[in-house]
Image 1 (cartoon, rainbow over the protein chains, first blue to last red):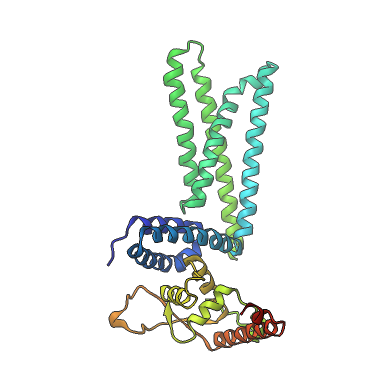
Image 2 (spheres, chains in turn orange, brown; image 1 turned 45 degrees about the vertical axis):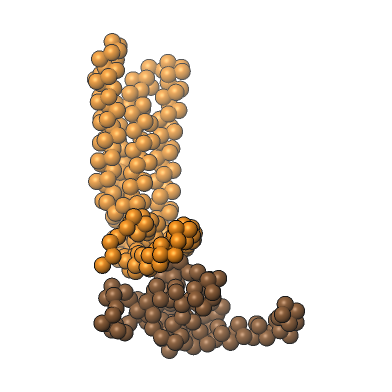
Length: 208
Length: 121
């Protein structure tokens, strides 16, 4: 058996561009075909390998797009992704505007929630982006992915804030920052929990 | 695989160039994916190159339509890589390929009548 070289390994990873059912049925055969082509072109010249890669990437982009758009779940997933992304954007934008308005006009009721809104925006942008990307390229459990990602994006800045700024800035409100980040974590994780529950129930509905 | 055969081969026309090339490659004997690619490449003198994505996307659709079949047995087990999967043309696939060839033939005849071919030669 031929040793799997870097090009073949890269191509194998690129197959994630295709829908999972297509990948499961034809993925190993596609890698086999690419491997055969690669070794043939490598014997010819280095330029041939480059040409093979150009053709392969072109083929991959066109065919993956076609398979994705023809996939039965494509429109459902697209609709769900758009609703999810739009929901997150509205929440983050509202929190951001509210925070800016409250600080500008010194509205105490909004400033009280300032730490929470700050964490909601910062961790929300980074966390949701990471969760979305992981959901697209991996087959990990969605809720667990959200849980661990949100835990990391909330814990890391919180620890840094408490350890670095908390020690150097005398007016730093440590307890409010901690409450703000914990509140933001609970808010986002609650939202993802509800989202995963609704996904599961709609999947059961489709199966029935 | 889901079978969704059209009753009349003409209903499936026109075929995509990739599909017709794959059917042509399988017209004389069963082949695995890489053999199909090589056959198309050699027959067209390198002018048509089908990548793995287009190849297996077309194979998927042709399996679903019942134009081709996957072989259960290996053509020559002694000198063959058992990970490969072989495909052959079904009876209905042959009818579709013939119908497409006849359609293209009529098209070429029309071009000849309009002196497009003689003008070029």
